[in-house]
Image (cartoon, rainbow, N blue to C red; front, side, top):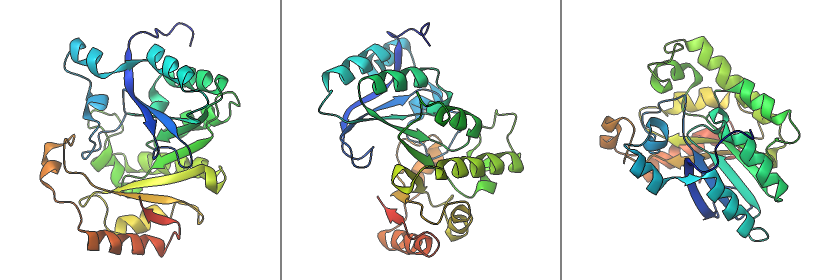
Length: 253
């Protein structure tokens, strides 16, 4: 970790947020790189990369800038959310956690829920163990292989592979106490129907906090999704009530 350069553009820094870390005034750092290609993703630059170095330099913060911000905001901010992209793929993640913990911050990790080995290794290291985990559920586990997976992945189309990864991540996340974990789903019309909600609910603990968010049809990774209308308020209410029939902690955030 000590050999990683700290002055290069590494991620998007949100200096203060009231919503990214439940119960805490926090900062957020969105790291580059992801193993998925969710068609509705609006963090497309973090997933695909930036157009040129000049754009990177003007848009991304370095690890040095993140650490300087955390030092200045000690006693004001209490938490740091590490997100992406996919933070479990990024070599800077352990370094960030270590430094933030030294400064007294609580750590929330956002993960796409497909890297159980990496997640388990992190939480089994007491120096790096996050204080809170938020795991994404994109759609039914059996749809990841085609709908969510990167088409260039050697695991594209391998349903059992992705199902097992998602289910295992849900189990690992469930090892945390209920107030220190949550599951998150974006209500994307082509990907989240009642049948998908039922299958997702089957892999969640009964006491899960399952937070739903409306779909935003803008800047999507797959441009075709920019033309898909979001669910109406009535449709969202119906879907969440259906989710509540399985998981009482299902809510619209």
